[in-house]
Length: 262
Length: 257
Image (tube, rainbow over all chains, first blue to last red; front, side, top):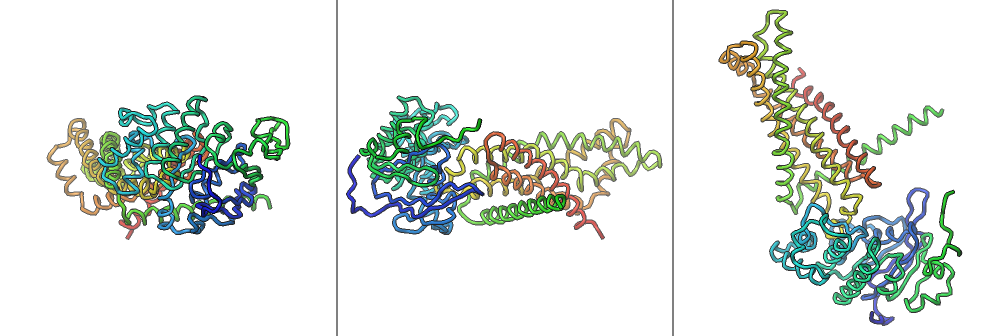
């Protein structure tokens, strides 16, 4: 992906984000700037707060403390109408694809166009089939229901739905989890292509290092609710950070201790 | 002291639950009156709740009417008051049995399905996906169900009234030897507009309760398949109990002197 000039204004600014559930602290002061057109991958083990961070940015959860700015606009504590306006800039690919199983594939893809942009159904269907072609799905899949598709195809439909409204910001929540290595690589290629075509800003969360290396401009590692390392993907192999080293090489021994109950 | 603490804990849990339900209801109802509306979804829910519940409600009503005639006939025969059978049957059905039994049957059929569907959408992140596609889940999922429940249950109960009285008529005339014309005449004489209207008002309230509890429990379910199961149970149990409670309250409002 392109190198991003340092002077570009930040698309997303997170400042000192805190979130806890009862006694459990999930985010403990996360600060991160994502430049326009940049692709940042958040890595980290399960339960380190990656999903919570994305949900806070989307407004699905409210952070306890801290600020989230999108295009310089503060979104924490935003009213419903403003929130809906800001959300129009977003597209998201969910971990389990989260397709609406009561609707056929094309209506899933066209959902944001019909409901969000009030497009006519016929026109939206044509656009949906165009977007499906972009992710390598033929038009005869359009009439099927999500439950009739394989996991990889569901992910593609989810991707088509996320890019259908041509969003400025796209989030990918573990895009390759549960896919075979070849299909995972296909999805990675599609993500890179779609983000580049749209010129979108992307945040992905994953613990699949192959995927991270492929789609990231910058990598940030989240551990115990804090970003312990942020840097360009080219430097990830000599980060000088023992936690990052342990994670990218997938070793059981190291500073990160898995909480295993005996 | 521990006993008091336990009582307090239960009481606080109850209040926070009631508060959450009240807020949920207020938001959901407010979205019923604000655009955008989803006529296509309202229609689909109306067909689901109204049309597809007809067999269940019809069967419940016809057997209730039939058994009611047998029971009241054998009871009133002791006082040689068989003439009152038609009277008792039509009043019991229109005022009480049709709305309450239809409400309970629909709670089992529709309330459970709503809680399971919305609960599954919650745990598979489909509700989050709705939000990211600039669609308000209260408007898209909940308002259509509330509107359809409120409108369709009175229709079902009206049909149930007719079928129930008809079931009573069949048993009374063919089995117990009542004069058909005489039975119909005393049924008609006993019936007043208020009897039917009170039953339909009850039905509207019950329909709203069924949809509300189905949506509320589904919307707040968490934790995978088990959470959805718990939400489904909670939806059916809570709406059944609320139906019985509100049945008393509405009867008191209509008929207490």
